[in-house]
Amino acid sequence: MKVCPHCKAENEDQHIYCYNCQRPLPKKSHLDLKFTHGAEALRKGDHKKALRTFDDILKLNIGDKDAWFMKGICLLYLKDRKGGMECFKRAGIATGGGTCSHCRGFKRCPDCGGQGGCYMCKGTGRCSICHGSGECPRCGDRDSMNPDCRMCGGTKKCPRCKGSGDCNECNGNGSCACAGSGICPYCGGSGHSIQLNAKDVPSHLRQYIPDLE
Image (tube, rainbow, N blue to C red):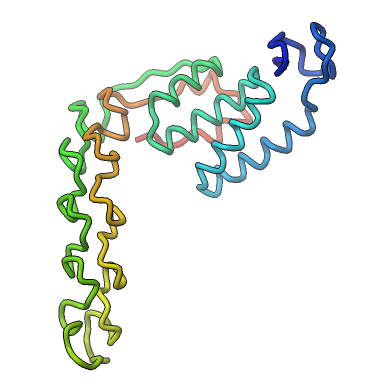
């Protein structure tokens, strides 16, 4: 189904012009090409690029259920469970699930325990090996390089942060993967996992269903 981007009237996929306002509808070939690019980005793991592409498709045709499904998959990868669920609803796909295996139903982020801070640096944003100096803790304060140093190999730089001084887990922002919310990013704080009803997913899209556990 094509939804006219001008008057929002519903049209059959084969329609070239909107039956209601007579304005041109997006070409199927153009939409298909964009979908191919979005699917390729998703396969390569570039979830943000894929999301932008499917958003572009939905701006042209808000009635594209395949694009809604793919947008939902992107949002799941990006830890936006609520957004993903809304997209699957728009795609006409039923969802259900048991207890989240990551937080075990407690709804708190399993990495930070609900505190919101990076578990590696304890929220400081500094590398836990060099404590933010960027230097090799074994030989970094020496006047000359030590090529025999087993920790840095003579670079005098911290092997974990590569000399940046920033925590490599949070990139120096001090926040957990839950973005500091303390909410489990896998279930969105619901305490439940997501299970898609594969029977509702068109066969050509089932390959994109992720292992949600």
